[in-house]
Every structure is written in C-alpha cells, then in structure tokens.
Length: 416
Image 1: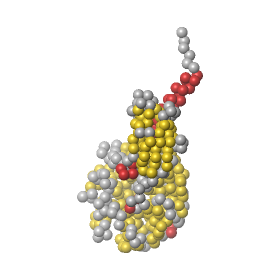
Image 2 (image 1 turned 120 degrees about the vertical axis):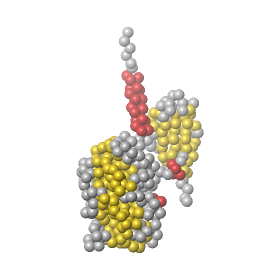
Image 3 (image 1 turned 135 degrees about the vertical axis):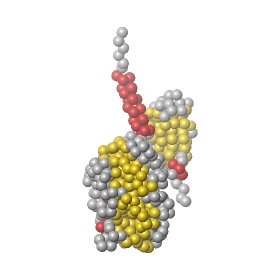
Image 4 (image 1 turned 90 degrees about the vertical axis):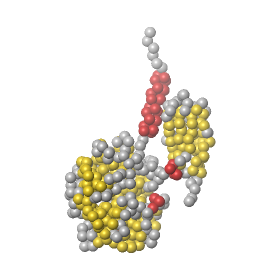
C-alpha cells in the first residue's frame, strides 16, 4: 500500500524547515567587520564568524575613515571625495543619517567615552568634533591638511597628522580646551599614527620611509624606529596582543614586532597592497584590508593562518564591531518551560537585552507585536536575544502557540 501525504502536511513541514533554518542563521550571527570599498563608494559588512559578506551599504563617495560607536550600534564613515559622513545603523546595516562636515573628510577617531567622533576635514583645514548621539558638530579646531587622528587612551589629547606641504607635522590638540597645544615637526608627510595601550608611545608612519617611527608621547619626539621595508602604512599595538603589528604595503605583509625591542619578529603574507588592520573582540583574529586584491584577510595571530573574503573594489579602512560593555548588555533571561514564558512580564533598562531559552521538550518561538525580528522556531536548548534601545512596553507571543504571551517593559537608561 502506498501512502500519499496531504499537501497541507507537506507545506507545514516545508515552512517549519524554513523557519528552523532562519532561526539557526540568526543564532549563528557573530560580530561584524565594516570594510570601506574606496572605488565602489560602498561598505561591505562581513560576519567574522562565518567569513561571509552579509550586507553591502552605499555610502558617501570615497569611504576612508571608519569607526564603530562604543555601543556597537552606529558606524561612522567619512566620504573623502565628498563633504559628509555616512552613519550606518549597525542593526539594519543601512545609512540612517548623513552629516555635512566640509570638503574631504578623512581620518576619524572615537572620543573619550564614545560621546564624540573627531573628523579630519582635510579640504577645510580643520578637525571637527561631532556628538555621536545627535550628529551635531559641537566645535572645530584649525589644523592644516589633517589626515588621521589618534586619541590618547586617557582622553586628554588628540594627535593629528598634518600633511601641509612644507610644514609636515603632528598637531597635538587638548581635548578639554579644543586648542592646539603643541606639535612635532616632521621632514616627510605623516600617514597614520596610533597610541600604544599605555599612552606612552605613538607609532607613526611617514611617506617614503621604510620604518615605523616610535614617538615618546611625553617628550613628543621620535626616539626609535622599527625597520619594516617599503611603505609601512599603519602600526598598531592592540592591548590584547603581546606583539605589535604593522601593515607593510610593499611586500604585502602583516609584520609582528616586539614593543620592548622594536624588532620585527615574524611576518604573514596578506595579499597585494594591504592597507589597514583591526582586531576582533576576542583578540583572536586580525582583519587586514587588501586594497590591491579586493578582499580582506582574517588572520589568526597565534598560528599565522589566514582566510580570504572577497569584498568590494579597493577596500581600505576596516573597523570591527565590538560587544557593548557588561554594564550596557546585562539584562534579563526568560525561560520557556511547561508551555509558558517564565517570567512573563520582564523589566530591563534601555540598551539592555533579553534572552529567551527553550527549556521545554517542545519547539517554541518568539514573535513581537511591534514586528521586530524574532525567533520563528526555537528547538529545545536553543536561545534567542533581542536588545531593546527605546523605553516602552513590548508584547510578544509564542510563534508556535499563540496562547503563550509575555511582555518586556523597558525603562529609560539611567543618566550618570
């Protein structure tokens, strides 16, 4: 005897399988890296855990500087061939705001506490201070032909590379008074500069110099060099790594150096004309943009192994999305057990998250009445989280059992 399934049964099975696949995809999402494709006028969004491009976002022409806000919710991208910054909503991965800053904005830096973004407005010979929350320009400081910016870890000073022909320098800006308080004269154009984690040294690259300059940030003078080979572009000592790293464009290498001896210890090939580097939140992966190869390299600093991900045309700057601090993310947990949400009403503060875990023997789901993305299907043992940024009351139901209901009450964030 041959059994024939009813079409409705087959349809329900197909829908359940699709929902399960969607839920699994949502649960697998990792931190993202934002890559500015200079010639495409786009930003590629890459899930670092899956090593896949998950979105491509059109932005202002000539994307150059990129920084991610401290809470991970916004990405600021400067359009060096335009006069504006594009602000990307990191949840939707689309541009939510455009900020006019003046002609040719280039390097960006996130200010103390993440409340400000500093912009090197090269064509207007100034550094602009932008309030991250509102996007308003709150002040400007005259600096001739500013290119890149680094802010001291204690937030007291900003060092700005100034590419004014005939008077190359690093301008030092007091972050309290917003005045230029000093400068370091240079004989060649400065490219990039980055502070060491302790704020005592600055790693500076110069056009046409095959070595990184080590600057004493107290005496404000060059005290050593790190020989690298042709065209070092960015040197960085991330706090989570014992060694510093240098992206060297000539040989196409990521070099590792000893901060104590300023000697290069090893190198990893990272493609044609590498440009920038950032580190993952867990400190276990470095991301290097490969401008000449239209790709990024995800590098394991421990083993030296790397993975290539194709992105857009001429990727330059990269910026990792880091997890919010514990104070921002600690929220509440809801257990799904005995065909109920426990607790049903849940109270948190704006900016926190709620995690639902299926502790039952049957499949369940979470569907929100405000139509925000939920979890269509959670199998036993699976979980789902949502971050709530705006105060209010958010009702939800089980997407499998409509009689199961709950609510999340979000109170305003406390002002410190």
